[in-house]
Image (tube, rainbow, N blue to C red; front, side):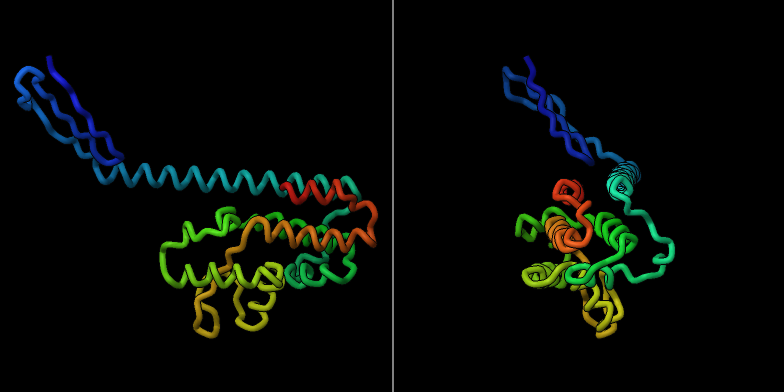
Length: 210
């Protein structure tokens, strides 16, 4: 009688064969997968993940467009070069046109946000101390500001919104939670509802779920 043991990993497979009668090792070894294959597998997984995220974003945008058009809000091409961050901040306490609301909704829905930060954990923030510090910094800012307000402030004072080194030479992180974007959109639409009754609570809930 023989016993066979296997140790299967993502980059290797080890085995051993033992004689049950005398406990001696009959055979053992390990087979290493080529680094090239591992790299290829990583590339394929990364590509699949990117395609999946793109499909989801396209679906969200198409769904949002259908909802907006169903209540008479359509794209205004004259707003193509309008700063969407300014419109998002304006929409919190000023009336927007239907075209501006369309642009604001599509801009926020496209952003989506990061879900793991909603759990108030630092999981994923392991690459550098700068990243960890910025995750916590953004979390504090979101207690009083919307993502749009934060982003517009950064654009105005530092000339940059995207993650990276700003004009002051400091690292900033343009990462916010899914719930913070949803909350911002809810605040804007709740206010705009006072001017446009067709923006019902059901319509707002439809956007928030997206």
